[in-house]
View 1 (cartoon, helix red, strand yellow):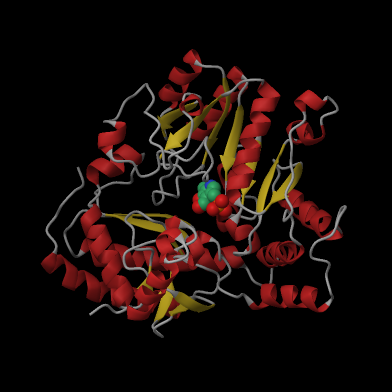
View 2 (cartoon, rainbow, N blue to C red):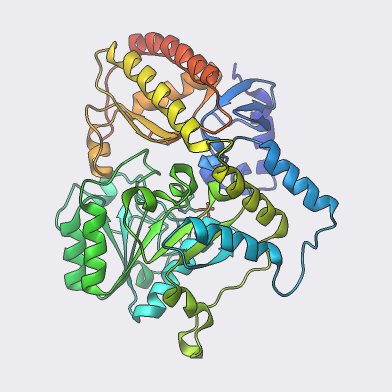
Length: 450
Ligand SMILES: Cc1ncc(COP(=O)(O)O)c(C=O)c1O
């Protein structure tokens, strides 16, 4: 008997009207759980089960669910009869932009979208307009949204992309039908942490941009090797392509200045989303003014379009301003708090898994973490595909969910601690993890995906 009969019922009903029963098929999972309430570090499903949440709406609710300050700001805006759909500029978008640019040093000016995918789309379009080139480089194991240039090669089967190649590129492993072949031929996929492969592509094609998550956070937490991001910056300068950091996940989760402020590398353009408005739908594309000004280029043939009925939707923008204010307030010390909790979780998990004698590696950047069942920190997707125990990962996640600890039930998906989590949450998580681990390792043989 499933723990989630009502959730199954909802899915079935939805399927009559919505293909797949879910409006973002990335949210479909096994088990499918219908969540109805969230507050702070906790979520509740429709059956009434309570969970400590480490999914955080795909890493969006960095302050926690329904953070009281953000909720209050939105409530006030509603109470003030804020014009939802107007015309012309708004003071809110200007306030947000100023606040944002003051904190992210590579962003001299910005534009606002509703989603991260729109932001990456626009960034790549600007790069093509600036350089007059069509080819782009993306990472195997990266996710940058759903559009034609980037809907490819995240968690690929090795049957589709083949074994590791270096220097070289991988075939376009489409996440979607309907991407024209001619379009695929413009996209070059290389392994993360592999500068030789970037040079290989640069020798063969006129490249407009390279886009990457500076830490690969859609296959857990895969960090840049020393010198890798510097190397990309140097290649961009030598070859005249734009370096785009997709900070939709890394952005405000790791530092108020983005991960770029921690690694010290300045991209030409960057994209943000998720944590920037604590789960309200807002994306940002920003960077050097000389590139951003292509949105208003005096030459019509060079001008890049930005349009969107819901861009900088006022309630969302209010939420984003309140989020940035809270992230920077000395009173809350958001980053200090989440880093301490991250360290406590890491230490606890290391102790629990060391006792099992099984290979594992806990990768963490601040509040974001991933437990790999392999004996070293992964350097790229092929490393994970060859060494990580996917079956064990899946079983581990499901058992934790049954105990009230919610990580997305898909192997190598990042866990996200929020500001609302407490030391007690972490300790309860570790206690339950210990119970799951002792049960699990009696049942699951070591196995690896092909
Ligand atoms: C790194 C990264 N870029 C872009 C996106 C796309 O953002 P959105 O889902 O808001 O379109 C995502 C979404 O998960 C992401 O993780």
